[in-house]
Structure formats: C-alpha cells, structure tokens
Length: 307
Ligand SMILES: *Cc1c(COP(=O)(O)O)cnc(C)c1O
Image 1 (cartoon, protein in one colour):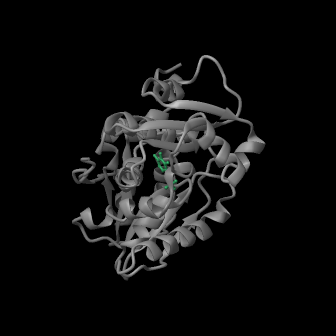
Image 2: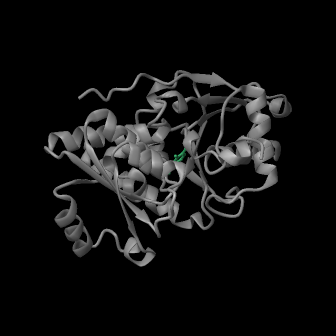
C-alpha cells in the first residue's frame, strides 16, 4: 500500500501589517498534501492505515461530529486505499445530510448516529462490542484520529522544514498535531497550539499524554521537548463559533495570498497569531512557521458564495 506523501512546500508570507514588528512568517502548506484527505488528517491517517493493513483489518471505524474533517478524511482515505469505513456520528440524523456526511456516504462510509450520552461513553467495552457485532471486526481510530501513530505522522512535519525557526504554530482540536510538532523540535524551538475550543484547559494534559504514548510505542525516537504552550484566547466564542471580524480576516488573507482558510481552524489560528505579533508577543528577528493544516472542506459555503 502506497501512503507515502510528498513533502509540502514552505512559503514566505509577505504581510505589510506585520512588517513593523520584524518577524518572519512562513506557512507550511500541508493543505496541499491531498485534495480530499487534507492537511493534518493525512498525516494522522497515514501510519494508522499501514498498521490496519498489517493487522489484516479491512474496516476502519471512527467517531466524529456531523461536520468533522476527520470523518471526511477517513471516508476519502478508505476509498483511496481500499478499506471499508464506518463513521459513528454524534447526534440525531438530519435529512438531507450536510455536505460532509454526504461526501462520506458517497465514499462508501457506513454512518451510525448515536445520541450524545452514548457518544460520551463511546470507548466503553460494551458499546464497542455491540459495534463489532454489527459491523464486524474493525480497526478503531479514536475521535479526531489522535493516537501514537498519528503523532508519528505529525512528527514528520518539522524535519521537512528547511528554514530555521524559533516558533511553530498549529491549531488544536485534540492536540495530536501539536504533539507531533513538539516531538521533533530542537531545544531552541517552541510550539504554540491555538485552541479552537473554549475551555482548552485540558489540551496541555492531552498533548503530554499522547506524547508519552508515542514515546512508549516508538522507543529510540529522538529527544522530546516539552516546550509548547496552548493559546486559549482565540476561540472566537467556542468551537465552530464565528464573528464578522473573523470572516473579514479570512477574506483579506485570501485576497492577499490566494490561500483559503476555514472559519473553524486555520482562520482562527492566523487571526490569533497576527494579533499576538501586533501586540509585541514576538521579538524582532524571530522566524515563525505556521502549519496550514488544511480543512477547506469545512469552509462555510454560504459565506463563500457571498450570501
Ligand atoms: C482536525 C483539524 C485540526 C485539529 O487537529 P488536532 O490534531 O485534533 O489538534 C486542525 N486543523 C484542521 C484543519 C483540522 O481539520
């Protein structure tokens, strides 16, 4: 099975509003890795699919909300690499399905909707047993796709970057991507994770826990620094909440650079980073790399069409 990705480019962001602050910002274009399995989801799935095949599993089962980029990516990857896929979706089925779930279904993903209480206890043995009674044997991918193999995939981002930097940024849902960045930093580098959730207090603990799992699973991996920080000030009201200012930022960014951002993840991170730079958070002379984790499928289409 061929799941090796080609390196994504690193691109200088020329930004007049940031020029007075003397920092250099690059964008690591993981959004260009694949048209359907975008960004960090590709990184997180890659080694998991190889492992599933090695275990002789032909079905991938995973969990997510109705707009989940992870559900979308898993469905697409399943179709690409010949796995059956099952998506356990939080909440009631709504008809017609939204474009994320319609795409997943078109990829052949079987969808099961479960109420919020069941979803909250989704990793309990009895529930998983009932799922394997119904769907047969499967390879289980946690919500958001975050596990030690996902960290391994995301740990491949930093070695691809051929400019020296002091700080690297990504957005955080589960923190798996951030953990991968932290796993391969040099001692003079630090990582910032922008929480897209209100109440991202749990994230630092999650990142440490999944880093530990990664280290245990892949002993002999290089030095793991703990030099990361969760930025909690730019969730814009909470997960998937937006504001006119956020949309304005995304629109301006797109017009200037021709690069799409989404309103759930990368738009919030970049708006947050620009604000921090303008508030003097970074010393002049520093170089910052921002990982564009993809997510274009989750863009608000009504807004995109200008309605
Ligand atoms: C899923 C997703 C994230 C969150 O990644 P985690 O590893 O769960 O923190 C960030 N950006 C985009 C575009 C995503 O789709």
